[in-house]
Amino acid sequence: MTLYKYKAKNKEGSAYERTLDVKNRSDLYNIIRGEGGSVISIQEVNSFMSSVSLKDIFGGIKTHQKITFAKNLGLMMNAGLPVTRALSVMSRQSKSKTFKRLLTDIEEDVSHGKTLSESLGKWPKVFSALFVSMVKAGEESGTVSGSLGIISSQMEKSYLLAKKVRGALIYPVVIISVMIILAILLLIFMVPTLTATFEGLGVKLPMATRVLIYSSNFLVENVIVVLVVIILLAISAVLFWRSRTGQNLVDIVSVRIPVIGGMIKEFESARSARTLSSLLSAGVEIIVALDATIDVLQNHLYKNVLARVRVVIEKGEPMSAVFIEHEHLFPLFVGEMVAVGEETGKISEMLMSVANYYEEEVDQKAKNLSTIIEPILMIIIGIGVGIFAIAMLAPTYSLVDYI
Image 1 (cartoon, rainbow, N blue to C red):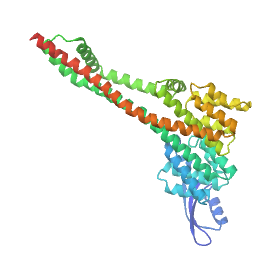
Image 2: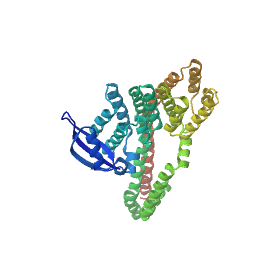
Image 3: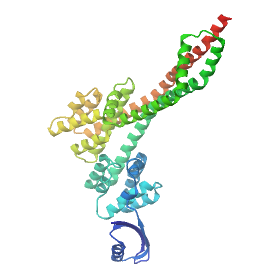
Image 4: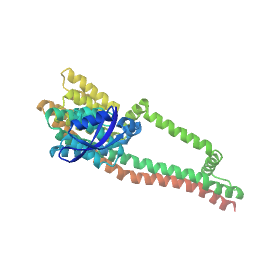
């Protein structure tokens, strides 16, 4: 099969463009004649699968692009545009070649009779089970535009919340990394100059100064070895981070870190509640909704809890007991609100209230964390500069005593 993009003219004389996947040009001409059109131009193009690399498929489609896609597609469908036309409009507007090709592929599937959810389901690395399930529920209920609006809102809130948490955590890491780099540069370029001066004067050096000079000499004499070790450690850390064992360890440690651990628990609770609430409000069956929510979550501890909730529901037991049982991961408020939802038949509404509450909590804590971290970092920087200054100035006092 070959993908062809053609421009043709219909019986009324209006030009139109389409892209079709057919065996050869002869079949394409037959299709165009069957439409009652006359060919203006035909161009052979690469199919999406052959022209987009694995990097493009897995990493080229950004979260904000998917959010915009869901939001705009929902708005255009709500305005009365057919799915294929809405996809065509977004494809022409997109500046990303990767996303443009993806939209073209989806448009072709839909124009050939596939549902939108089936077309999206072909790309699990791009569209999550949550996304596909929401669209499918909308198709079954006849409210695809509404489902797309819900999913875009849900994704946007989760994206912004995650961005704030990452921002609060990345800031101190960047500052400390810069401090370490500056310390290494001082040891390599500045300390050797001062060392030569001290040796020429024959001054007895304090312990702190000798340690600093020893560290400097070691770095200067073994620069290549140190660089190789740092690079190997960095590569090993990245590989370990990406491994299942590494991810599991990070998941466990992250929820136990003082202050930050509590914020991460609230973040995961908010994401779980909002995702599950969005799916239930769209009419998705609770088992399917739980499966989609498990797929969205990244922390394996929370995945395991929701998997346990799934088992409990299949047995006909209340799921609130599972949340209450795992109070070390989900705050007690979550379990109590779910219990109220089960009693009143308003689980979706209760879960949304939980999500809103903890999103506000995480947002405020992220702001507070940034405010608290700044003076702490200033103290750490001050201690580092003080130690270096004392180590370098102490020999000066020894020199005065010597004179």
